[in-house]
Image (cartoon, rainbow, N blue to C red):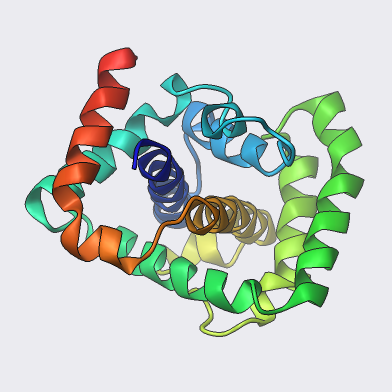
Length: 202
């Protein structure tokens, strides 16, 4: 359960940044970087390695702890987008061609990430294009609400799509670790304990 909790924290942290970008036009780079970087850690040995350690996921772990403890998220839009991404993940896993296209695209962007870092506008722009040409064609579509002024800007849309791709990465990882809806419905106490254990390590 501890590794599943970490993957869910990655998902929630991604969605939180999507929400922030959509409403303010700006992300918190220190919170966005670990989840964007997870896209490029394809062969990581552990779940911690996927995110470059636990410390970078502290915001997501706190979000998950709060949601699992109370049974609801303070910001319902975060829950809604996260749930939609979990549905998209199931469709994604049934589309080998889309999986190959995403994998190939990430490998192609890898060199730019190594040169400029995960949150450079060029890297985010290319990840956004990758999402737009692959995952966004799957159903259900992830609908993001926010400030129309920002949502009308191509660079902001690209950032949102890049972080949604990172959220999908966490959703895929959660499923690979054996995660399922039973965890969310009936194993919240175990999730709370796992989050507490992780947070005590930070």
